[in-house]
Length: 236
Figure 1: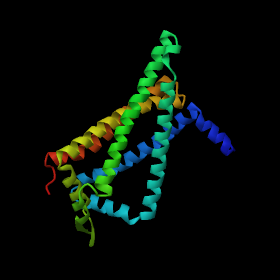
Figure 2: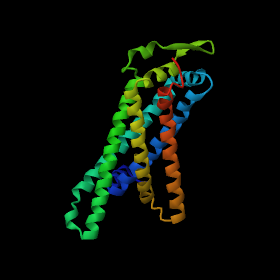
Figure 3: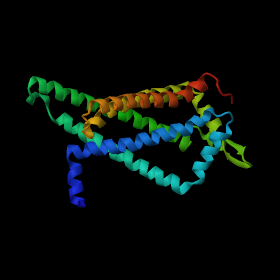
Figure 4: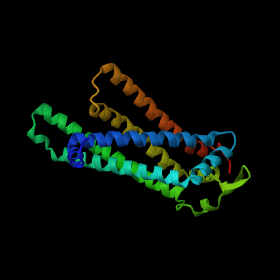
């Protein structure tokens, strides 16, 4: 079994940090998929489905906070490793390489910087999203929204979501963030192949198509809710 010092030394290498980015990224994508599946209950025939789902999450506080802690840890590790690699790429000046090497190094550097920018925008969106719907600090009226489900008074998640996305600026920012997430996932998928050393062309092709389909599904799934609200699919 590797010692703590060996693990720490591995994390200081670029390969180790790439593995951190890859594994934490997989965990975060898994969360996003589950989160979208929960959100899709907005399209159930009645509002009770999403309200029941929201109540279920809040009623299991220990499990919810344990998952939030794991999510926070994965996000912090992903950001730390990604920023560390980006700094390393910028520090490797392309002037010291041959022409072909310069172009390759420049491409890698630009790609990593672009991923940092898109990741920063996504982080900003996540913070706003948490303040908006989870902490309910953007609109204080959300806290007083309640409805009866299964004989119990629960938070009216359906009404809160429709009210929140009725504001075009908020819906526009949400859809834009989902577009940036699409790009981030697509670019990250290519890096994942390199990190795991996948060189089989057929497997790489399947992975590439799969990552495209996943990114498209996430974009359409998440964006469908604010678009539906703006089109008047639900009435307050």
